[in-house]
Length: 243
Ligand SMILES: Nc1ncnc2c1ncn2[C@@H]1O[C@H](COP(=O)(O)OP(=O)(O)OP(=O)(O)O)[C@@H](O)[C@H]1O
Ligand SMILES: [Mg+2]
Image 1: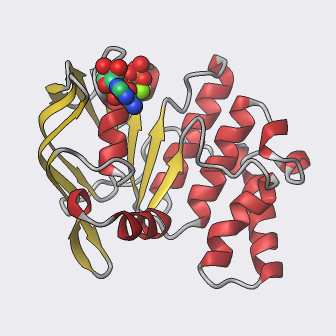
Image 2 (image 1 turned 30 degrees about the vertical axis):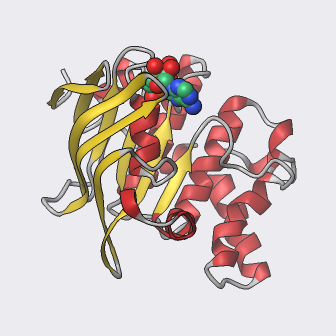
């Protein structure tokens, strides 16, 4: 872990907006998951999304990341090819966007279970046109830096929760993504591993001026982010620097 673990957000945040969500509302049947949410994320900024269970954190992350299309509202994303509204894009465009613009550190679903750790990390490099040997070499290096030297040949299902989280961080680093989304990245981890994973996540964010949006119940995660947004019943309750 040593080489890339950071003590805190090392990268100065900028004033340039990366994502601007406005009037975002979403229901699941009769359940209002989000109501009139407005939120901007700047380049290089780390933002913790907090709030009680069921307050809408995961829904908000999924909408910002183009995984779920909101019932109403706009999610403007600045990309290298101009600004797009993620909320109204077609499904196919949104999945292409997720591959190029975002990195994901989610507890399930985002790593490919049939592939090894190294293959999961190499995948975005291959999709981006790297040669197989070069992608494999870079993947091994990224896994090494996250303290995963011995496990690169194992499939995802054969890893512990903390190891899988770190593979996801290595994969996010391998992408061209300017935004990393993490949902409860420390939720299932002991406190030492949680500190390591969070340090790796903040370092992965800082190294390219990426933004980080992290849903969490963990006040220690929030304390190390630039901003803390608290949700209550699908609405933003507060939006401020950590306490
Ligand atoms: N796929 C779904 N179908 C139906 N209801 C859902 C679905 N996903 C979320 N909900 C509901 O929407 C609300 C917001 O859920 P969400 O998962 O965003 O909360 P959360 O803040 O991430 O909670 P937690 O801290 O438990 O992860 C909750 O009332 C939840 O039950
Ligand atoms: Mg959640």
